[in-house]
Amino acid sequence: SAVISQKPSRDICQRGTSLTIQCQVDSQVTMMFWYRQQPGQSLTLIATANQGSEATYESGFVIDKFPISRPNLTFSTLTVSNMSPEDSSIYLCSVRSDEQYFGPGTRLTVT
Amino acid sequence: AQSVSQHNHHVILSEAASLELGCNYSYGGTVNLFWYVQYPGQHLQLLLKYFSGDPLVKGIKGFEAEFIKSKFSFNLRKPSVQWSDTAEYFCAVRPSGSARQLTFGSGTQLTVLP
Image (cartoon, rainbow over all chains, first blue to last red; front, side):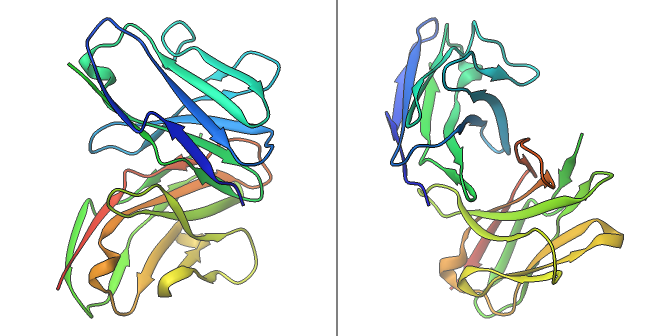
């Protein structure tokens, strides 16, 4: 199993600013992922965070908007850059080991 | 690419009623199927999964799901719901043996009235 923690749990930010979300896993995992869950919608994969190389982004998501770091096998960060109200969402970190585990999420509100 | 449909957006039941939540997927090959649950204020957790073998799988808290390959369906069932089952339920699919990520359905909000 894997236990995932995220910081912050929630934040309210002004448009035009950036927020960095941290994800910590209690064990080493090869695959870490970032998802977005917009209000009333399902989870959408943003990117796969690769250790030692650049993240792999899904269609519709770009590195300039969502830069990701993966310095080691237990930690990753996602930055939401130049925020607008449309970025208001829950951002979830996820890992895959024996099965898929999800963090508690970061609820972001952009005003 | 695969896709997942959950036809019920919001289901309201009284305690002790039976539950069935629909999930249909679209993919031409073999898949792994999952149901996740998100209780209010909590994170997503795995309810049950199907990889192969017996198409009727049992999960935690009395939930079960049946994989019907001919119908591309993986419906979630529980014979008698409780107030504590109030949550959002997500169906997800992934091609078998793939490193690709899960594709989620839009979710079904279940409200159980005491």
